Each structure stands twice: as C-alpha cells, then as structure tokens.
Image: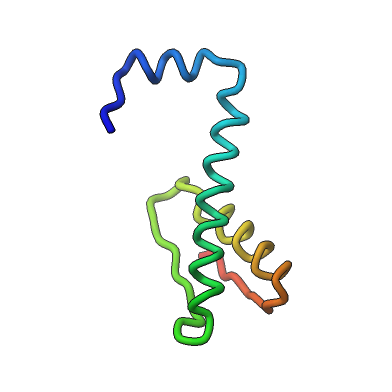
Amino acid sequence: MKILTTDIINFISQNEYMAKSDQIYNEHISSAVDIIYENRKDRPIVLISGPSGAGKTTSAKNITAQLEKRGLKCIYVSM
C-alpha cells in the first residue's frame, strides 16, 4: 500500500485522527493478545523490545490487562 504525504496530512487534519489512531492501536494489541493467549502453553514468556519512548511499557500494561480479563495471571517487568 502506497501512502502519500498528502494522505497523511489529510488524515491528521481530520477530527477523528486520535480516535482512529487509538482504534488501530487497540486492534494491534488485541491481535497480539489473541496470539499470546493461543500460544500460552508453548510460549509462556513474552518479550517486548524497541527504542526508548516507543510505548513498550504502555503496551505491556495493556496486554497484561487483556490477558488477565481472560483469566491468566501475568506479571510484567519494566526495565
């Protein structure tokens, strides 16, 4: 998919930019949670890496919350 600068400017200019961004983020988190949940017995440890300020801790907290809603006990370690 080709994304043009004008497409980005038009998208950011919309009032729904933050809502759409949050929706996309939550969809990605939900997809990750589905994969983690399905593989929980074979892969009980999940590691998240990335640069400083990328949202690793926030994502870990959100993934933990969704997994706990499914009845799993989770612990996340932020370093």
